[in-house]
Length: 493
Image (tube, rainbow, N blue to C red; front, side, top):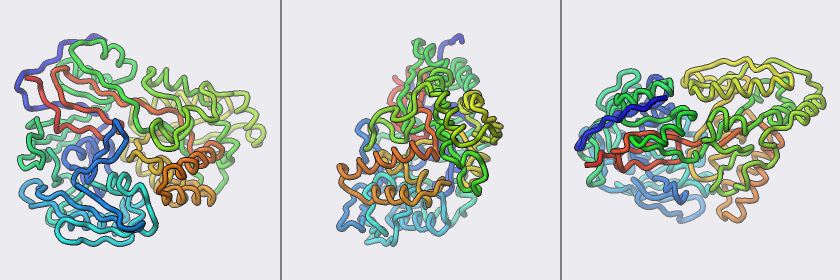
């Protein structure tokens, strides 16, 4: 691919960003949002906490402090003077209470992932929230305050209405929604932002472009200044181009396969020997090389490097697979072969990966009947368990091993179709344990059981890559796909 010069002007205060996907969808944090919607949401809201990605720790943000007077009580001090967009007043503890109660009352997606421990919520004055949990939950700051930390303006939400709020979103972050038209969202500077000197830009135009090659071509033609998710095969050439900055960092994520184990037990994959056979049939190194051009790390388990409980990339399954072992397991299970429908989303790299994986498992007699979905359609089928099997990726929501396992493996987890009382007991015990030295061996047991049972099969941890005009400065990459903050991004003078 030929790279033409980038176009930028000193003193510019706008940014044109190309992201993957189609329509942006919803921006209200109490309704499930897709990745492209999250790229907008993370710039129009600030969270209660932020993650220090370099050190994998939680730092205060809109919650400027918190304490735990006893194992079941959390007291959260809300930062004073934070203003809602467009004159909706100051953010208070009552807004946090309203948001979390709304999640709980509507049984939103956050109930199963972040707000499950909450028993009662009350305010103590204008800027203090007191939360009682049902059981001890050590990762409360990282998981509950983190993933459920985008807060509604109670006044705006009631006045605008829940449905309209998803597009006419009132946040308190560095940018405000100006307009949304299908695959284009325009953000403008929040003049009342609480952090002096930020944001550096006046305007961001985000365009959702499904094809990665088209996104990169648009950047090279000067139609965009910044893009996400280039085709991995184009990354080496982009890195060589002196007109652009290319960032690549290991994501807190995995590409994986999941089986719907709540369908009644008639499908061959409900036998764990068949699932093990599939895992042995997977050549993970081929996926990393052929789909990601090396911009990924092979793994067979759910805990990425740097997380509590991490051991090594491959604990059981060989990087190039073991076809003989896979065939032996199929024979042991008494299964010669079968057809199964496997769904994936509109990420073009995952569609290519599914085709590659389908070829791998065909060697043990399994025929993957591929059904591609847009992101909204995929989430609808996945979360409502109207699928047999899927291949997808997921970004982990917090730097804590609870976020790698409970949601996916506990019988009450929002995405779990797996039922195992022993696993439930381990997961519950690990999230209630405060001492890291005692928690870590519990996650080793959780991982070992996952590798044996294979309710999910993990392929790799994928790098997140952005390419942008080298005259931009201030952007800091994160390890989360949707965590793309632009309040410090600016053009060099």
